[in-house]
Length: 201
Image (cartoon, rainbow, N blue to C red; front, side, top):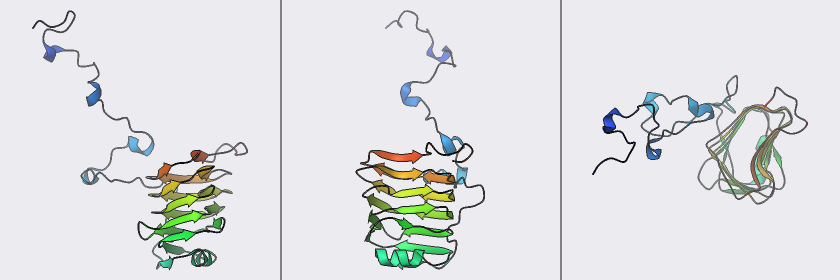
């Protein structure tokens, strides 16, 4: 049949500046994703950003890991001098907030690694990695504050009912939050507060 009035007679001669159809529109990346992934990593589709830390977030580094299966073991390890790598196994019910010191890595050793009840507080600490964890707190799951810096929170799951699941405020700086899942909360992520000075965060 004849083309609609006003249509180009030859589709191949159509204006190339016109946007492609909706199903062909390229995705618009944001943040770290504005830089294309290296060619070597394109096949697995699982390229992860490096932390925006200004100096290298290593946590406990290559320190031999220790294993925590309950709250007493976890808090006991975190009271020791770092560097420190703690692997969490199973469901751990925290009795309130737990302080995470500098040069520490907390990692879930299996899919069942979960922290419930309380949360983790990175207060003034430097060089902290939280990865592969699952949080089901009564309030805030992770609070990064007090001028904490070089903190990397990634590949973790946050689920809660009230409050903010992840809070970054009070002068915290050089914090990377990537590849996490948030659900069932009033607020997933809070960055900054009324008292924060410009220049951080």
